[in-house]
Length: 212
Image (cartoon, rainbow, N blue to C red; front, side, top):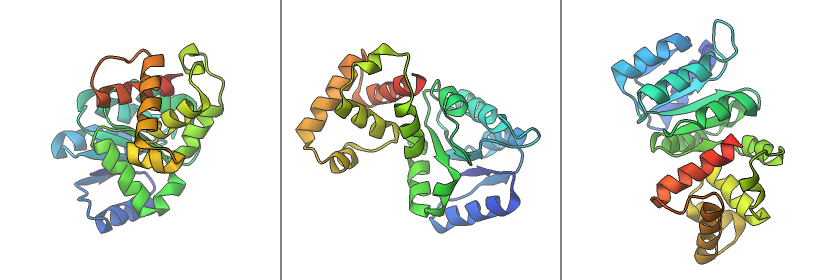
């Protein structure tokens, strides 16, 4: 694991939190420009990266994440943000087939939630903060394909975007396995994802959702 955060105290806290969870931190930096070099030398499973970093504190973290995902698609990236920023980071990372995530900094106080999100991106799965998902769902969409989804199918897709497993989705929505499979199949069909493996279609469905 590599931790990239420009605030020294927060970076140290994140490293300590991860190590307490049993995660090996192989590198840390306060500069977005150092991230690619650290990934190249250490080849970590994932990178924990602040969106806004020096020198301009605008999109340095996003650009570093893009570079990592493009050059090392097997490395997951989890972005941290102080604010809900749906129009930039999420849409940029949604274009990458690798594991990606976007978590609000307030979530890092929950070690289990942070660890789970990192585990998911390292495995090539999405891990989007529920508040980000809710904001995206509330926004008007230009993609007419998503307009065809029922309310329940939208709920299923939103939970998929958070990176939830089928079991977790069933528990959240209080539905049976067969009912959930029917909803997921319907989502794939309406989004034109009827061919390909289940895992691949799941990722493509989430990408379609994030790009909308």
